[in-house]
Amino acid sequence: MKIAFWGNFGSDNLGNECTLDAALAAARRHAPSAETLVVCSRPADAVARHHVEAVPIAPSLSTARLPHRRPIRILRRLAAELRDWPRVVETMRTTDTLIMTGTGMLTDRHAGALGMPYQMLKWASAARLWRKEVLFVSVGAEEFVDTAKARMMGGALRLARYRSYRDPASRERAKELVTASAQDPLFPDLAFSLPRSLTTGHGDPPAGAAAVAVGVYGMEPSAMNAYVEALGIFVLRLLDRGHGVRLVIGDAEYDRLARGRLQAWLQERGARDSVLAEPIASFQELIGQLAETDFVVATRFHNLVLGLLLGKPVVSMSHMDKNDEMMAAMGLSAYCVPLNDLEPQRLLESFDRMERSAEELRRGIQERVEIWRERLEEQYSTVFRNVIDKGLRGDAA
Image (tube, rainbow, N blue to C red; front, side, top):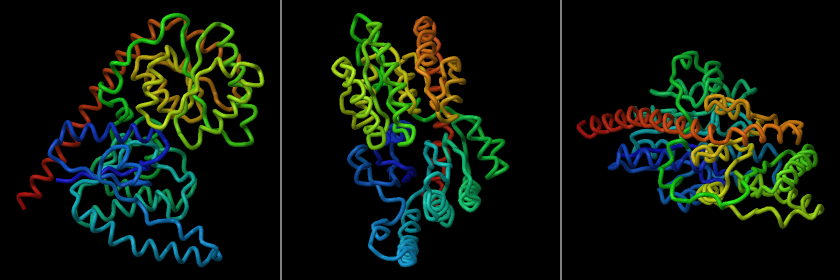
């Protein structure tokens, strides 16, 4: 029996990588005899990070960068897609189940005509061609504006035997694609089921003044200067109070520039050496660094998730409703600050409220995280039981 996990994995987005790791760990717990395959954007990276078999979602896009006129590039891309269909069909012939795994995959943002919505429909169609199972498990849905791409995503959702969403906003958007999604269940983000071994045994933060992990986010160039200044002022205020500060990121590609700009801003004010900013290349390294702090103030969704898994009170500098939805479900709506036009004073006031209520918040976070772990185990039991039953029926046939 073989299970394929599909998504934008093998990337520098550490949130996507911890989502995949959680799904793979669940497969090992609930279907230990199953083979696993990862269908992702960068297979070589997925193999190195997760030690799994991996294949690409799409054919190589290198032809798009050749010095040809646009119509020729389009024809080359279409030809590559036609050649890729037999590979996808054959992959699904030898796979029992295709699981669309977490992340905000239901979106047309940054997607070309043959981007992720099309690829999702392609793989789901190939699976159903062989009467294989398609499941969407705790997926997120972001805003979409392109009708054609929305129809592709809707087509993929309709081919699924099982669908669940990570928050109410995602399910509401999915209803625009598939009306029946209104009845689909809600489950927490899969990263809340990461093995306990990853989030325990790190020890307590150093004694003394509280340490704060400040997540740096890769803003658009037009907003970068104002963002760096606002976050820099907040960091200086923390330092003035005697807090330790550690800068963390959630995407090794998009966030490094912003972190470098913030470090340069702090250096101009003589504060760079007072702030820790160590390299982060994996979500495991991110967990290790977060474990050495008492509080987390971040924008990246999974910076917040991993902080919560470690029992840390968090403040969300929110730029998407997925942050607000999760914070509300965790009982932390009072600690959300808009990222757009970030105001240092408002951020500091939210941090102060969090710090004053820290002990109570830690207890509530730990209780909620345990409930969410149990909820996700319920979902895994249902998903993998059906996968195993389907595999046994297939074997018997």
